[in-house]
Length: 226
View 1 (tube, helix red, strand yellow):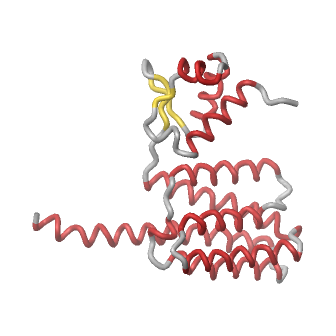
View 2 (cartoon, rainbow, N blue to C red):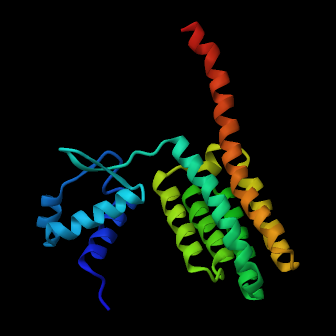
View 3 (cartoon, rainbow, N blue to C red):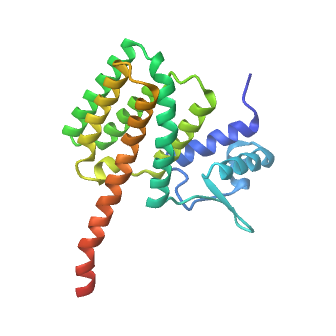
């Protein structure tokens, strides 16, 4: 069954926001979209309301829809929410992961170490996403999976590579990945796995917060002298 016009419009807009075509602050003009895609205004309006509900855009009276600008606070809030959702999804998924899938997870983690050694943050980020997606892929609650995917997408939209922004965090995350796989492989309880998966995400948020606080302390003397 072909997707509805509103669904098509939604996918077009979200993909173009994600790939940077529609950058933060960009105004989405329905007349322009209609001329480009030859889809009437009603589906565009429906898709914009959906994007607004999901936090991708905000609709300004007498202006229209504008792509949201995300700051560090938005990134941290998103990551901490993702930590809770993904921790639960990983715990539900763990009993159903096969030996082959766990071997694949370890392989992805090794590839991440190679990307780290090669100073390739883009590849590191892609592999990190694949690692996490694999560990929660067997979650049998579709609603939970949809929520996790939505928050991951929002996190990627913010375009902040926290592993590289917080010194030492990337290396620590690799060790935590191995620890998660060890827990699943060893048959740890869902509660233990959920806690470890959640802590893994919040450790990144904490590392970035500490680094930013340190930068502010270092900048204060310079500001007083200026």
